[in-house]
Length: 267
Length: 175
Image (cartoon, rainbow over all chains, first blue to last red):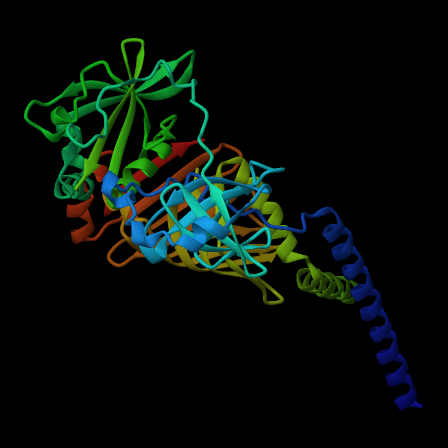
């Protein structure tokens, strides 16, 4: 009799537990229904800037022997692809191309890679050779339209063969390793335009320092570094961190009311 | 009394079951959405639901696309009556070396049911530690720092901005 009673109690508790499990699971499912199903991820590569490299025009000149007669005579043309850029670096050469019907969908294509059914075989200074079904197709680079957006931007320094401003890498590394030394040599204050920060204003530049040789003047407002905006301290800090591995520095400044760009090579 | 004990037992079992079945990963995603509004992102993490807690491994923490730190393990324990977030081995971005130690071995934030308007904070690095409290209603953060000799020398510029108190430093922030 007692055995039956214990069994009954056990079954009763088991049923109660199962009911509680059911209620807990139902609540969880209800919560799951309303909660987001995917996490937030940040794409930190959105500000990607192509690495700076200086080329001599000689790098782009090809020897006549490199252009085979077969390419010239037999190559067909491709109408479905636009060639936007060519990066000629021997076996590491690559191109940037996009389908003609979707010009914004650019893709980087390395040697031997397939794009729209065509395999990239050869890269030359102003055209590339694709292959499809054992036939070769030649694609010429699209000349970009003149960009009129920046017509007001004065080039304070031009990165050319003769007058390029150069900063030793050691100086940059020294400044990054010891940030407190920066504030002794240059004064930067947050600059606001219509209540919103648009950059950092140079309040002083110590003579004989790297900052003077950069060509910065008191009153200049630095609004960008390497094509990145400087609208808050975090962006400034991020740009400052990236200088460590940078081979070039471009400061976008506003002097008086004139936007200017100061460009340097870090060697 | 027996009835009360029985009720309490049911309550405990129900809480345990709720913790167990809670969609912790989705709750974490919801927390990520809230952090996104503050421009804080947790990225590249591996998420594991270990039954009673949620573990994030090798998480990178960004603020406004700037990498602040990499955390080896973040453990979130939503135990309803006692909730804990603990971070282990925080590798701080070297760009902050002027302000913070490169490695913080642990950080913990605790919330206990009998003190619902407060968060208890604690953490330690190789030669320093801190403890503090967040008053959620008054929106005040108070930290007490106990700094080792090496850190005292290295971060003297930063420490100068804090208030000295017996045995260390005191920091108060209203948000």
